Length: 484
Ligand code: TYM
Image (cartoon, rainbow, N blue to C red; front, side, top):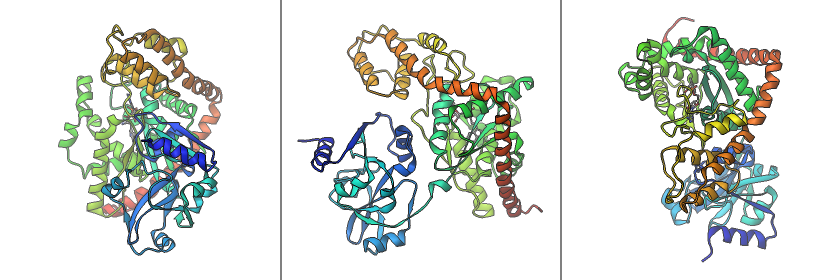
């Protein structure tokens, strides 16, 4: 019995079409943004295949991931009266599931929106989750016999609003980079993005007023060096847009006190800084909600540790909408493969405040090697499954996150066979990490040497942000009964 990939390759070979099968990491979520990020492509190159149930049976409709169907046009074009998403059991019957619907090969009629064909190379699902499939757009109708239709509107993703922020507490580490910044980078091409240095949040735990300015600047430099592009996104410094605090106070009038005291993030900080349990610390999630809602953000690229704050944010949006009328979308977290980067100590997550837990974006090769050398391991001779916690688990998570080929699998096999050599693995991993960080460090030098360019970028970003913030506040104040 042939597996799905063999069947796909047979079909592609028979029709003489050029293709690439791209091995996917096991941990890659089944959604389009994660794949776009992994392939390093834009949303316009990703093809979404959606199965609909109609009065004439199930059909597959293909569109570019940066466009949206006009449902009335779609019904007309395919000649049906009723149209709804196929259910999970419909998909199961066809031998597929959400996130895995293949570019061709299902026993249904395929329709292709013509904007898909405007692209050169397109990327889609091969149907098995182990490989992605890339072909020339013009070849798509040849393999799936798809009928070309003209039924989408553009752009939707270009209008979806994204907001994220990093506290001004010094240099970014790999957790910030992989859990948040990589998500920002993936979204800036196709979405309406605002990214912020949240300096007010940095003041909720002990900080040094003498160095705060430098910390703020440093995060901006790391943003720019990592590839955030002021032509594509707005960059702001939170405290320079005073509407953040204004909106946070108004949202606080809606939000009860007790759930804030119960938040795990608040409890952790309370335990960490028992002598500094200030009111602003308790208020942190409300200010964070205001950050995102001020821009009517819908997607928030942050690590998994921020999920409790995301819930507060949604609750604020819901409450406001209930009381004062529909105003804010309910924002959701944009997940990346690096949503939880574990600590180098083998316990907990990589964190700025835990010494020995992190690799910074500016660490040189020797520093990275030295830090990895300290990750606790075992004798390497026991074999079995790769552990889920501890230093060895951390090394394997990092291997997967910096994976470019099958080396991750090779080391996994070595571990299972009880013949892993940690010295070799750590040296290899150090190189992989440094390979990714080196260009970022070089770019940072450029921005350090050109402070005027950075000033100009910040001025431009703040101006644009202030305009949006003023509009939201006008609407909010009007609805809440404040005179304006
Ligand atoms: P901060 O500065 O503590 O963290 C910045 C981002 O880095 C992510 N992160 C991690 N991701 C994966 N693994 C890790 N070990 C790891 N450590 C940190 C965090 O999840 C975060 O995305 N509360 C935010 C700051 C903020 C904010 C906002 C974010 C304030 N307002 C509005 C988004 C939208 C924070 O944790 O910052």
